[in-house]
Amino acid sequence: MGKILIDTDVILDFFFDRQPFSEEASQILSLCESKKLNGFVTPIMISNIYYILRKTAKHEKVIEGLKSLMDIVDVAVITKNTIVDALNSNFKDFEDALQNFSALDKKDINIIITRNIKDYKTSSLSVMTPETYLKTIR
Image (cartoon, rainbow, N blue to C red):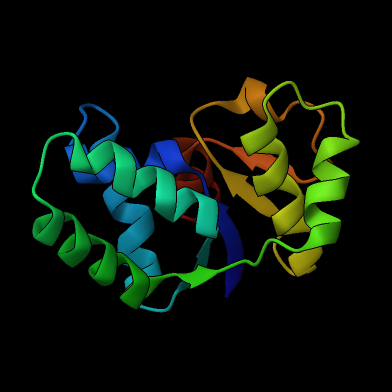
């Protein structure tokens, strides 16, 4: 079973049903739900997703959605070392740096799934769009 970090944009594609991306996001999450894939998020992602979803939905509905998400993904921790590595990195976006180094610290995550490939150009991990990743596993 592959282990991947699913970036915030992919999760939001699913929750907001953003076309044409939501179908692939849904497929990624379905693979996680069926245990064919081990998907990870980070605590900062959950906080950001809550904040963004809360702009358009009630607290209770957002919490319900996030609980459902937590049923199918795992959480990669962010430690002091993760933060220091992110601060010392060449990433232009600090949040992306945190995601990257959280995945690296997990050791067995080797792919980041995102639509924002350019944001991870300095990553030593493989970075793929949901579409590309799904093509590689079929």
